[in-house]
Amino acid sequence: MCRTALPKNNRFETLEFFSTMAAFVPVAFFLVLFGQILVDGISGLSWDFLTQNPLDAGRQGGIASIVLSTAYILGICLIITIPFGLMLAIYLTLNENNTNGSLLFLRRSIMVLAGMPSIVVGLFGNAFFSISLGLGFSILSGGLTLACMVLPFFILVSEQALRSVPKHYYINAYALGLNQSSTLFKIALPLAIPGIGAALILSIGRALAETAALIFTAGYVTRTPESVLDSGRALSVHIFDLAMNVPGGNQNAFSTALVLIIFLILLSIATRFLGKSLVNRVGVV
Amino acid sequence: MTANSITLDRITDIDQQQTDRLDLRQPYIEFEGVNLVIDKESVLRDIKFKVPRNQITAIIGPSGSGKSSLLNTITRLTDMIPATHLQGKICIEGEDIVADSTDLLKLRRDIGMIFQKPTPFPFSIQKNFELPLKEIGIRGKKEIIERMEQALYDVGLLDELNGRFDKPAQSLSGGQQQRLCIARALCLKPKALIMDEPCSALDPHSTQTIEHLMLRLKERHTLLVVTHNLAQARRVSDYCGVLWKVENAGQLIEAAPTRVLFENPRHKLTRDYIYGLQG
Image (tube, rainbow over all chains, first blue to last red; front, top):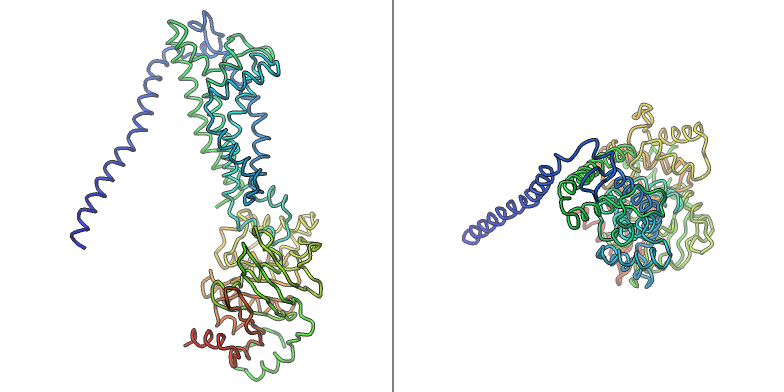
């Protein structure tokens, strides 16, 4: 026993060493990435940058119209994603144990869609919304395409949140003579809200970071959009365009990236607070 | 003479009482040839059993003999398990509840269920009562409070809570949570309470409190209790059934008034079970 215990111990220490080292990788990666963007982007950041429209293909001026377009696109995406996503998440939870062929197909489809490369979703959006439905390059087709991309992810995470409500609450509710809908709306949903909130915020994060799906659908135009049928440029597309297609656009690309990243960090902090306060509100101990 | 007066040192008295009161001619619940199959596996086979009115009936037996499943068939909670087939007749006050036409919500309001693990909903104490009461159409704040206070009084929690009904239900101790669950079931004014090992997650003191409570409750309710604890079955129950896994399915091998069953078990398995664990 003694002879085998020692090498095992060594092995464990080696494992511990490497796993500790591995923990530094994401931290270092984040610090380098954020540091780089912060150093290069902070000088261009000002109130004017946020309130002026881009000039000279984005080399000059700010990102006001871009932020507005992004908000429109995101808004349309969420208007579609939240109700549809919740309905499907509830449907899947209610049929959790159903091994019916069509339900399995539905589940499988959602999983595949959730892992679909965004460029493919973008091409689909272009073919379907922009061309077939005749919406052209517009905020509407961009938002709808984005919804197609975010929806499966939102469904999966929300379903997880609903499923993580312990089964014994359902059993107790049924045993007390509550019907299915009361059990769902008065017990399961309130308990799943922190998880659904997290799903929503993660989805927003994904939507904000999306570039490929928007290039072919919402388009490039930097003007302030006048309606949802106008083309509009999202923040991520703006960064891509400035960095790849506009010589001398790097400064503003970094500044825009900084705005986007700060927003994403704020979102992730909000997730924590929102989760906590909601948990307190429904009284989960 | 109240039920509270049952003590173990007055055997002859109790024997007399038991035979007087045990009336199996009009049982509250009657199982007639009940079979339960879950996922092609037979869980209960040909159960014939009567649960006398306003008495405490205990079901004892080793783990895996189908005791909890038997309880779940009464309120048809077995419906929630996929691929489940329930056959036979379970009559509650003469009405067969295995039939498809059974009003499950009414059935579950008539028969309260208490589970092994105390499971108040993770909301305030009051909300725990509001949810089931609103479901049966009681929406007035005053009536909700009245029913809640009455039920909490019945389980002896009213004074302990000091009017703090807004406290999270899960901040109570384990024993209090279990009594809260009993009160929550009582606020619907059920005719029977069925309990699935209600004390096995509790400390001895809380167990004693619940046992006293059960003795009080039987004046107004029919009680059916599954327990692992033979001493408990012997202490509190009037009538007792033994469930055993025979040929891979739970079968009711013996049922008799508790004292008769414990002192004079007829079935060999019962005898081994009772003496084996006692010795």
